[in-house]
Amino acid sequence: EIVLTQSPGTLSLSPGEGGTLSCRASQSVSNNFLAWYQHKPGQAPRLLIYGASSRATGIPDSFSGSGSGTDFTLTISRLEPEDFAVYYCHQYVTSPWTFGQGTKVEIK
Amino acid sequence: QVQLVQSGSELKKPGASVKISCKASKYTFTRYAMNWVRQAPGQGLEWMGWINTNTGNPTYAQDFTGRFVFSLDTSVSTVYLQISSLKADDTAIYYCTRGADLRSGYTSGWYYWGQGTLVTVSS
Image 1 (cartoon, rainbow over the protein chains, first blue to last red):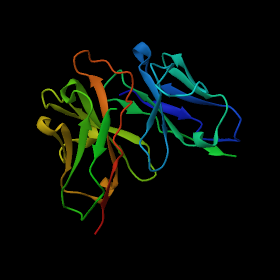
Image 2 (image 1 turned 45 degrees about the vertical axis):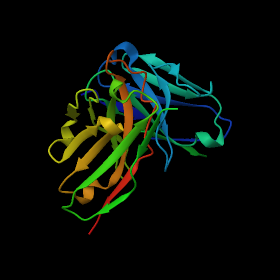
Image 3 (image 1 turned 90 degrees about the vertical axis):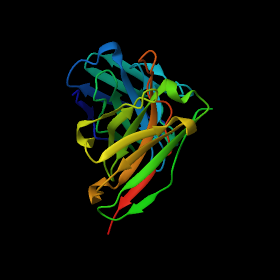
């Protein structure tokens, strides 16, 4: 099983600031089959990034993904009030598909 | 627009069973896999398994064998998750989410999700 470890656990930022979230895999995620989701209470998870760096439909360019192999990053360039949420990375290359434990982005 | 609509919240007693549904629309139901994902209170997302909507064959993650059953009814484009012998630990929100294209095996992430079904197990 590929274990995904996200850091930090919590990221405290002010609106307008940027932030970087990390996701490290216990083994290589081949083909960069790594996605990022945003999740808010009472809502379904929202796909932000797939293939490590491709933005999903409708996702603003303030969100960007990068990385390969075992190290991946989600960067939010300018935080809007609606961006405060929990973010999960997810690998879909090897079953069982797994999620990281999440990074909470909170208002500073 | 593709939609996944799940059944409503459930309150069950320990030992009972529950069956929740996920109805798909606006796409060819049997073309894509359907995954189930759980979120327990205060916890993260956990993949439970998936069902091949073309063959009906389910695959369960290790922690979801035995009491969990995935099924489907292609005539109404609906997948089901049944949980038997409910425990307090089963209290969670359960999501269905459309997975890979069954012809190619490829997915560009899980874009479509149901709204979630809250199952509460309490005496």
